Amino acid sequence: MENKIISKWLGCNEETDEFVIIKYELQQLKWLVLNITTFLVISEILFGAEYGIIFLVSFVPIRRMAGGYHADTRWNCYLVSNIIYIINLILIKKSVLNMTNMIVCSIITGFLIVFLAPIDNKNNRLKRNEKKVIKQKCIKAVVVGEIVMIIAYLMRINIIFQTIFWDLITVLTLQLVGIIKNFSDINDIKAI
Image (cartoon, rainbow, N blue to C red; front, side, top):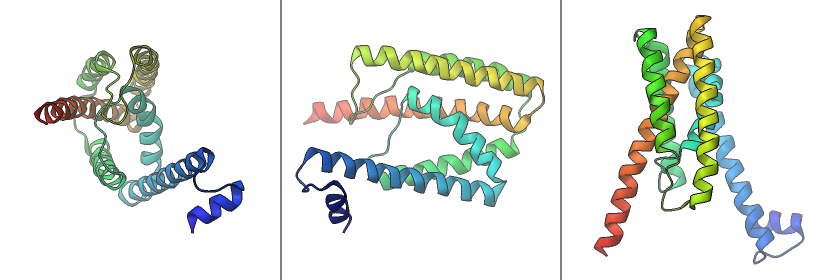
């Protein structure tokens, strides 16, 4: 059904490159809408939609540039993303860490994220020049996140401060898991 709609809309058959690209982009859009909707519903149920919005706005730019773990299927990605999201919401809301320690830890975490970035995966190997460009974008995203976090700290806006802190911790964790998975994937290939 979906193929017929796309084919009719484009006025071309299913074997053309244009059809394949549009179909892929529409599938990506569906997953994006599903993820954002799920995140906002979960955050509204748990603590309020503002937590979800702040999380997504601060997490996504850094995560996209830093790279790291990626699930093997869309459904696994959806499931893992939602588990990570729920854990983050709980940590943001229930965190009892000292704010000064959180600042120091986030600065160290930011340096580690930038040092490791970008982490590619078997589905998206990056060339050296791509890594340079992405690392520069990652540096900008982390610096902006850290500045916003420090301003939120000084203004005592805990929701923003704690969200960015846990976002950074999560990104670093996903990078480390991605490195381990990449190493495992390489060893699996060598074993064959």
